[in-house]
Image 1 (cartoon, one colour):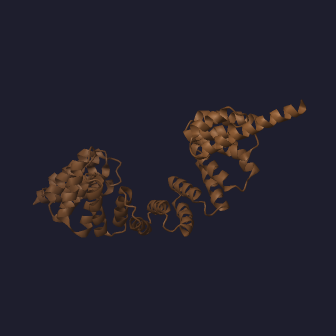
Image 2 (cartoon, rainbow, N blue to C red):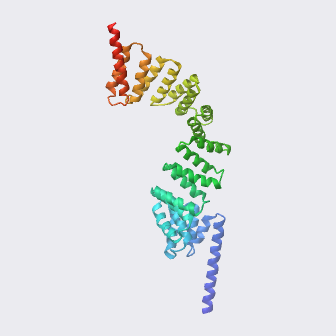
Image 3 (cartoon, rainbow, N blue to C red):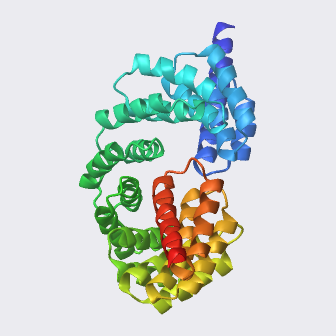
Length: 374
């Protein structure tokens, strides 16, 4: 009888082993549905069942299967880690944190656990802790590209540009032509206003075939701020041709570059295009147009452009002051000039330009008085 029972148990074991082997084979070739059906008929296959559900995208069933498995085996490392990753991907960083926190205590030198803890902190809105976790991950494994990218991204978000640049450089020392790292360091240099270095990395991205609207626009912006006016114009033109023709800000910046190049007609054309494309506030564009008219010696149109800017932003004392100056240049009659200065004093009593306005008003009154005496 004992021998019979042993043989029966052996047959059951062999059958179960064969079923598991078959299910494992199905899992390996991507037949998750049939693998799941077999795993369901066997005991102690919860973790394998969870992996199959996970591959199918059935996150709820996968998490439930892991939880059932932990009732029998709460110590296995790989299933715990898989469960934490799945919870994190399911927008449940609190659950992921509880699991990863214990794993890090057990395995403090594991860079991967630190990386996922960093992502968990991001999900929890704890950015400072995320920085520490990603930094720890790359200190444990300097070639951990994913961790370094996340570290640089969050440093840029926190406007810690110099730190972001330093960490991106360490990554580029290993992956010189890495598109993502070059893109991130270019963004960091932009944030730090180090436009010459931003140009270097944006140009490399183009050489590597990574021509995007963001890269083209910001390469042009970097040239503009590096006083390379013609190159700024050339790249803005490419942006208009390839990506978007109708962006008010692009034409505004092109006008600025043309003005620096002394191309006043082209500067005017661009600022007029900027005005045509932009709504609803246009005060900056009309001020730019006024500047161009002044350069051309056309004080009449400079006055009208400044007046329009003031209508767009009547509370802005800087624009109000520019309006008064434009009127001073345009009108010959001193009494008419004085009207604008007195209007400014009434409208902007606390303006930082008041000293200049009052001094000019005083001079005009004196000139009007002396002229009347003659």
